[in-house]
Amino acid sequence: MRRNPEHLAWTVTLAAFAVFCILAIAIPLGLRWYLTHATRAHEAQVTCLEGTAVVEDPRHGEAIPVLKGETVSAPEGTVVSVDETAQAVITFFDQSQVRLFPRTSVALEYMRTPRYSLSPRAAQITIQAKGGRLQANTVLRGSSPVEFRVDSLQAHTLLAEDGGYTLEISNERTEVIVQRGTAKVAAASTAVPADTAQVTLSSRQRTIVETGQAPLAPLKAERDLIVNGDFRAPLSTGWMAFNDQGGDGGEIDGTASLVVDEHRPAVRLFRTGGEYNHCETIIEQEINRDLADPLTTLKVRATIKLLNQSLSGGGYLSSEYPLMIRIRYRDVYGSENEWIHGFYYQNRDNNPTMNGQEIAQNKWYFYESENLLDVLPETPSRIIWLRVYASGWSYESLVSEISLIVE
Image 1: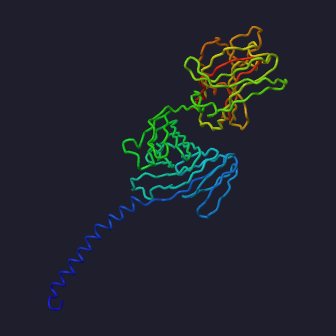
Image 2 (image 1 turned 135 degrees about the vertical axis):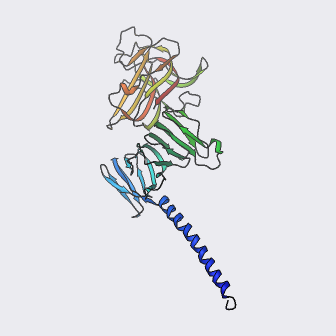
Image 3 (image 1 turned 180 degrees about the horizontal axis):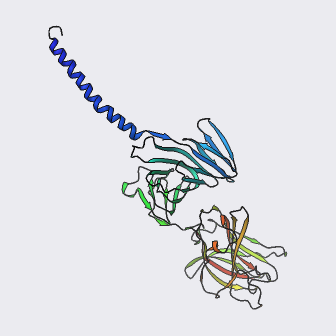
């Protein structure tokens, strides 16, 4: 270097120039990246509506109970859970809300907005639904976009603004229902082919994503809560059959059995030799399902045939029809109520027929109720069970299909 100081000078000069050029480019780019990507974390507000919610706060490492009417702040990473007696609502920084129905748990994974107004990136809300049923309501966001995502074991669901959505999550599947707005539902499994891995839902549509599978093509939002309502599986699939003799001392039971009538699988409710004493031959399905809020449709559909009834009309008290459908439900105030509808084909003795409907004998009849939300005294919030049964002295009736449609 002593022999060639000029060469050293040029080396130092060029190296300094290179460093200057790198810094001249890197500093503005780094600053731009920071202004674009820097975010601000937010907290959500958890309000308990019923019972006691549990908030597991990562800052304290403990579970905090939240009583009815109380509100607590929840940072990123918080797990919010409600048991079978509780409900809660989570309000996010953009005023979007998620309502947790009984037996639901979610983790608040990501709640962030851009730190600087120069950023073109959208704010983000991501929750991990661990199981249960939740309802999300997103708001109209205008010039401040928010990506609202609900992840589960089976699916990633992106919710559009100004929408209403219901998600039901189990270990086996995720069901996404759009009441209002649009949603993009993608399979969580990377093994699903790209061309089938995502569907877009519009208002009054739904899809189901099973573990490791692609989402189903969009379906109608209405759902049938009854399992094995067409009786193509054994009666023990979804149903329990039994007799109720009432309080008059009768001992002759009826039978509930699978038959085929005019190529239709059906359940036959049959009793003979029971004159002058009451019996009910029942098939019952426990449903125990919470209903959507808002709920727009609740209907019963059934295909039935009446073959024999010894009592006229609905019996002396309008409670003994040869075929009856009964639903037990819990209303929005927590009280349990019932809806009943009976069918008969003759009323020679002019007995009362309250909640009854006359149809032809020996002919299949398709029944569809009116929207029960228009006639029930209070709005149902949970369906407990549904019964199909024959009641009276001697009777023979068939039911081929039974559905309980909700939307």
